[in-house]
Image 1 (spheres, one colour):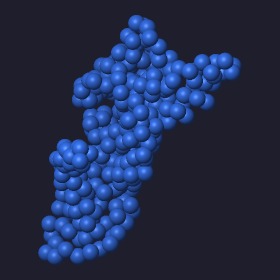
Image 2: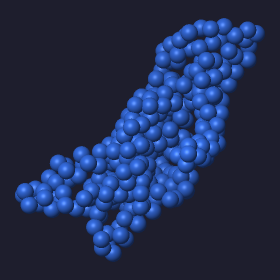
Image 3: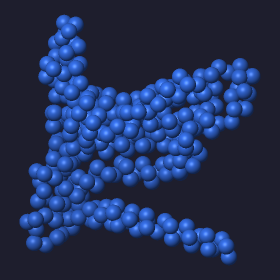
Image 4: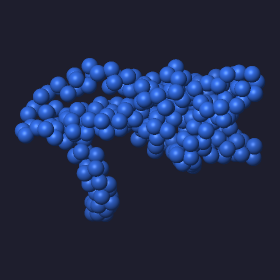
Length: 294
């Protein structure tokens, strides 16, 4: 009897979240997918089903393909680089000392800063004008100014550096929480067997902390894929912007072609939805096994 009452209380507590998620995400996504397969626009008197025509039209346009490829490259590079740095920092700082706590605090500090503040800060640092900090340093040593944010070869990497700088500390905290949840007896047993610290890390700690690694990697990828602020603030060359910035420009330019706009939106959210569908077991495990504790 008590169990049934408790279940009803839990159901009542999650009901508002379920209603909000359904109304704000599920329903709009389903409607967008439906309209993306029609001829719906401001000029259409009647709505007709056209199948994948809108998607084929988008994928045949270089202006659509380019930002998708930029986003894939951007998200993968950020996920790998950010998490490699975070793992190394977590291993080195997973100890009880004032110095380690100080470094952890400094490393995590950028994660609590406003994205707009970080954006404008690095825009000043990387601006192509002679007054930019990086170019001022280069010219001081006899170098030439570099167009960090406008050069198609390096613009994406310039933004990548900024995001890695801001969010590496956040991933580091996840890894430290996972490492602390591992029984110290495992470290001692590995040490007795002759394993060094790094060998123990790769053979024992990393496999046990796999759910936490998945959580950090998934959130890094999803955040990088969905980045809009950095793309608009930093990259001055429109041809180098990721998909989120491009869909914003696409909506502004073709706002009467609602069917194509809906198709572009479905393309943009598909990787995120698929990741959470197929990785949810690891994500839930990572969240409940200490990945975001402490």
